[in-house]
Length: 171
Image 1 (tube, helix red, strand yellow):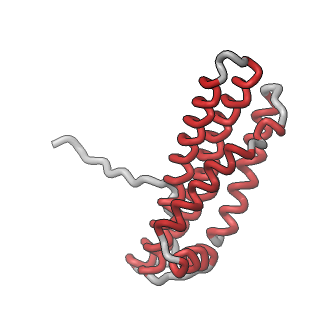
Image 2 (cartoon, rainbow, N blue to C red):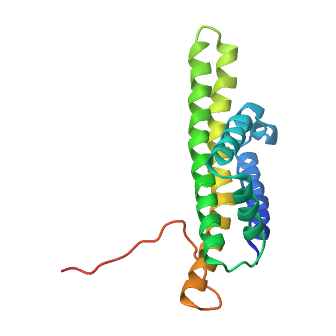
Image 3 (cartoon, rainbow, N blue to C red):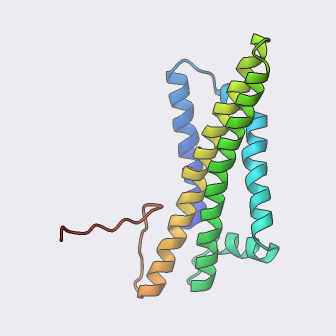
């Protein structure tokens, strides 16, 4: 299955599960619609990616992710691209949390403004983790699997985790 299809399925499944969990707790879907948090996480990550890669590299990474490309250089670039994107989502999520909490703290004397600041803070973290787990990591894992398969000369390798661990026996 192409990485882009997995990304779409991941986003859809993630959104449905988060919405279901929110409703089970008595919340409202509109609570997750937070423009400020989206601007911080999405805009910050977009800026990071523009600053880190050339226009040609952006096109190549998305084209490689959407295809069954097996060229090692293209796959390595694409893997690094989505790895950095995932890191950007997480870091800007925490940045949005910090900005939201600063807003809340600035308004301690005005209780009706504290809630919106805290909402931005937590929503930014949800956006950061959600985008990394349901967008960047699945694409990166798919591309990593294709890169490993090309290196070892097998038809299909699935890399299920963003990190690889090595276990060693006792000496």
